[in-house]
Image (cartoon, rainbow, N blue to C red; front, side, top):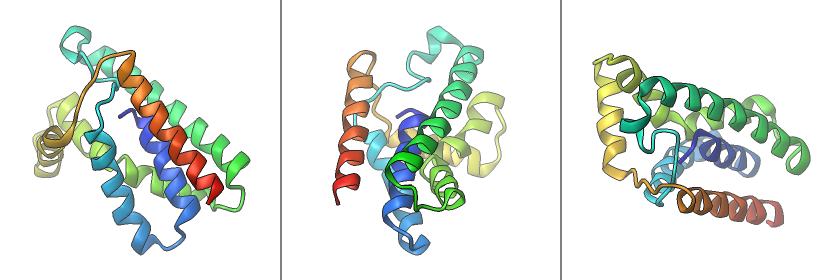
Length: 149
């Protein structure tokens, strides 16, 4: 899933669950669950793109995710603490943040290698357009349910 998708899910978790003892494990689990759904992300077709292009696209994706999450907070969940939401976004994206040093810079410290290998066990890629459709549909459904309930 894109960083944007994980960010929106983290935002929804922050808006609906104010107890971090519940929200943190849920945000981590949401990453695994979301990545199990066939999806497109910036690393799809990475062999053809190369690491530099994947890195640029990923940084753009991260920025878009923060902007969209902020807009969602302002429009749908204005009572949510923005710093708490930011924290939940980072937790929801945590596997990606942990694997990035290994993937992009070949840093072979334990947590980075572990996160990369762990993520590969549950990551389910699907190329465009359907890989985008699946995650947009899922995120919109979650947003709708969160707003209604």
